[in-house]
Every structure is written in C-alpha cells, then in structure tokens.
Image (cartoon, rainbow, N blue to C red):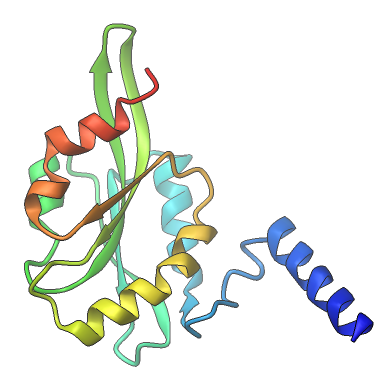
Length: 162
C-alpha cells in the first residue's frame, strides 16, 4: 500500500513538473495532439495567430486543431464557433484601459445549449486535458450561447484586475 501511494505521488509530480510530456494522461482517456501545443505556442509567443480552435478527432481519441486564424476581427472568431457543436478555443484578446493597450490569452469552452448531450458530456470531460497543457491562460470563458462570448462579456472578464 505504501509503495502504491509513493508511486502515485511520483506520477503526480512528473505530470505537474512536465505537463507537456504527460498531457495525454487524462481521466477521459482523450489525448492532446502535439499540434495543439505547437499552434498555441505560435499564438502565445510568436503572435502567428489571433486564435486557435480545437475539436475532437473523428474517432474521439484525441483533441486536434480545427482552425487557426490571424483575423483581427472578433466577429470572425465568434462566427467560427459552430451553432450546434462544442469546441474549445484560445484567443489573444486585446483591449484598451486607461493605462493603455492590454492583451490576455483567453480559453473558451464552447458548449451550445442545443448541442447533442453526448457531445457536451465528452467535451466537458475532456476539457482539462487541453486546458492544463496550455500554460499561460489568463481568462477562462464558458459559453453556452453567443451572448456569453460577446465582446463586451469577454471584455468584462478580461478587464478585471486592471
């Protein structure tokens, strides 16, 4: 029993200290494709994208990149979120405050009210696999309809703390 506890602690420490290496080990059994991390880093460090949209592979075994975009239009981003299907996304959200221009990387968990129940459950149980592998997320947005991901709603959440 003691060896088992030590083994679990060691595994936990490995995952915490090396999240990208062990990001595929998650409760839902869904892994994170390496391209997800590559495109996220391109957004975060190189500003190569304005947003990245993620989905599940056709066999439901891993999270994959569905789309990247450099469009500066927030409306384009919202338009790329399907009306009846779940998605995850990261968006480099820029806004202005009295102190000047700011930006925060936002993680979106998009689960429309009218999406199929099975899909909503699978996306909800797989979210942490992706979310934990994306280091540097400042704001997390849950969206079940377009009003919850509207620019003003996200601005309210992203602007807190400034």
